[in-house]
Image 1 (cartoon, rainbow, N blue to C red):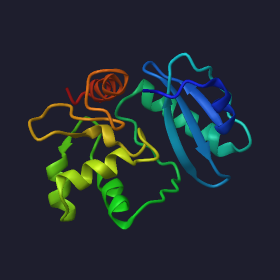
Image 2 (tube, rainbow, N blue to C red):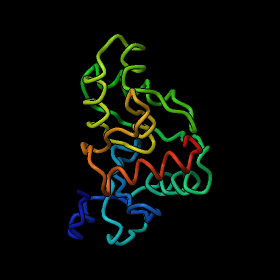
Image 3 (cartoon, rainbow, N blue to C red):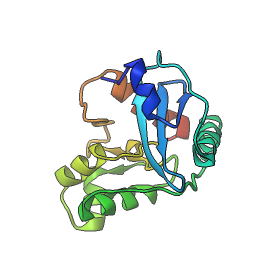
Image 4 (cartoon, rainbow, N blue to C red):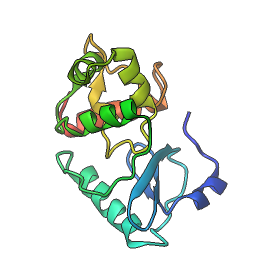
Amino acid sequence: MPDDVPSQVSAFQACLRAPFATLGITTTDTHVTGIRFLAPSVSALAPRRNSLAFLACVQIQSYLEDGRFRFDLPLALSGTRHQLEVWEAMQRIPAGEVRTYGDLAQDIKSSARAVGGACGANPIPLVVPCHRVIAANRAIGGFMGQRAAGFELSIKRWLLEHEGAF
């Protein structure tokens, strides 16, 4: 379920409305540190505190206008060695294409289940495109820790359709 507590908006340097959710963006002065999918009812928040929040909004808006847009934001990814390997592998999947959890696992010599866990722990979804990872049977699979149809999987479907993957 998406976060929809308006008081949490103050934790973000920007909140950007998208067709499928409001995106809560966190940054430092030098790196994007997080993107969270918030309920569509959460209000937008103009970028504040640093120019990187503004740049993140500009690039996300460019992506929303063109699903083939390539992000080049400085990211601060913090996780285990395995998670970092998975997140780096996901960033190599071109827009409009998908890979299975097993494909990524084979690439980095891991297991599909471990790749799925790293996808679910991704702190910067959209820019680190965990939505491009699907189940072996080519089904959309899980997203944001959810497997059942609902808000989370509707976001994944929207993103993949926007990029022309389906």
